[in-house]
Length: 109
Image 1 (cartoon, rainbow, N blue to C red):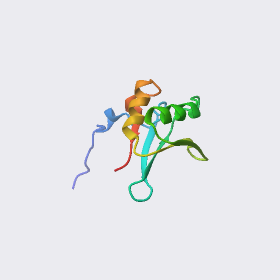
Image 2 (cartoon, rainbow, N blue to C red; image 1 turned 120 degrees about the vertical axis):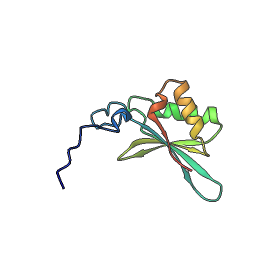
Image 3 (cartoon, rainbow, N blue to C red; image 1 turned 30 degrees about the vertical axis):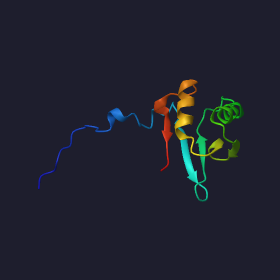
Image 4 (cartoon, one colour; image 1 turned 90 degrees about the horizontal axis):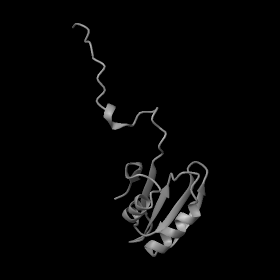
């Protein structure tokens, strides 16, 4: 067999997930099952210069749910909300121009 020559084509070039393009951080919105029908929504990855407590207070008021800010060593500050609030959180963050829709990642079911 002769040695095969591969061209320099990168199939994932337009995906934008390059290591050098890490200027925009992703906001991860997850839902975690507690017990039975109960679940909590966690929001992690918000920028450090934002007032996380104020955003949590706005979430609680607009979504009529309970919430808290938890500190994590690796991630930083994480907002926990009661119930499945994934779509509400995404819509709120985009409407209030806190972050762009392409920087929000929804995880869960």
